[in-house]
Length: 199
Figure 1: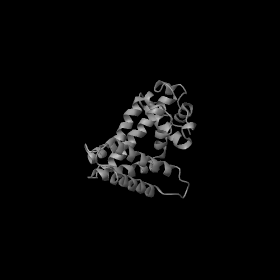
Figure 2 (figure 1 turned 120 degrees about the horizontal axis):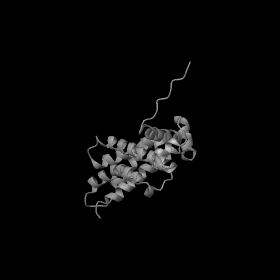
Figure 3 (figure 1 turned 120 degrees about the vertical axis):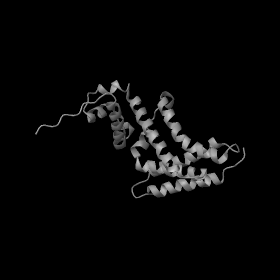
C-alpha cells in the first residue's frame, strides 16, 4: 500500500515545526544531543532547509528558549490571576514555577541549559522579562516605595528556581512535584514575612 505523501511545508510552518522538534529532541537527549541535522531528519526535510529560517544552531535554540520563556510566563500569570494579595501571588508564582519543571521538563531544560549568551539574542531578553514581571509585579505591590521590590522579586524567583532545580535532580522515588512546589511557596512566604519594609 503506498505511503501518503507528506504535506509540504508552507512559509512559516517549517520554522514552527523546527522549534517544536528542537524542544522534543532536547527533552529526549539534552541540549548536547540536539542538532539541526537531527531535526531535519525527523521532519523529513533536507539538511539545508532549516537554514532558510535559522542562521545556525544557536538561533534555533534561542527561538526554542524564547518559546519556553513565553510558556513559563503564561503559566505563572495563570497561576497568580486568582490571587488577591501580593504575597499570595508571589507564593503562587513560585509554586507554578516548580510545577512547570515537572510538567514541561523539555521546556525547562531548553530555557535554562541551552548555554546561550542572552545578550546576543534579544528575543531571549524580551521573553525573560515576561517571567520576571510575574515576580516583580507582586513585589512592587507588596513593598511600594518602602523597600527594594526588585531585590525581593529576585530572591523569590531564585528560591523558586532552586526548588525547581532540586526537583529536576531528584532520583526516581524522590520528592514529588506537588511537595516540591508547596515547599517553594512556603519558602517564598517565609522570605516575604522576614523582608524589611523600609529602605
